[in-house]
Amino acid sequence: MKYTYEKKAKLVGNIEKGMLWLLNREDDWIHDQYGESYIYYGTIHSSREPFHPLSTSITGYFQDHDSKLWIKVKGGLAKFTPGEIEKCWFGQIEEQLHVRIKTGIYKYYKKTKIPL
Image (cartoon, rainbow, N blue to C red; front, top):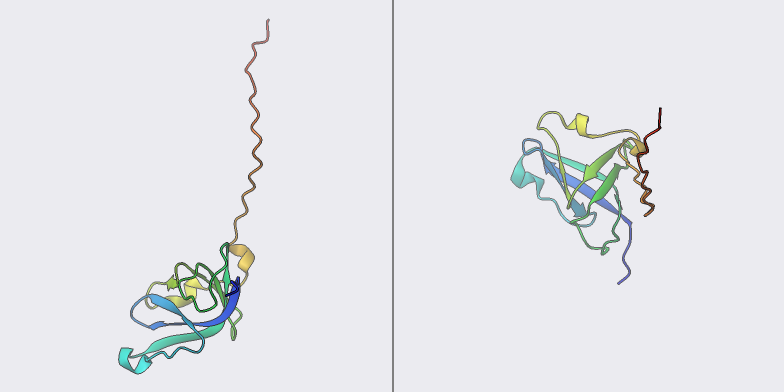
């Protein structure tokens, strides 16, 4: 099976729980059992590791197809404060990315005393 870095999926969750779970787009969400629910259809993008096409425990960023907003997903779960879900979505993915460059070069500078 070929691993991938992105796929179409959906985020679902109960309004009162403060969590959204990543599901495969074709999977059913029994929202009637859980009361009021959030359901977002979009694309999950893995930040570092490729994943199996049927996997749902993915760490990366999810983009909602309707609003084009992004949310961070860790291990298939996006957390938010109940009643304030709007605060966890952001407009630009660049706002959340941090770049760290590792060169492997270490320079040691010896302190020298300047004679007076």
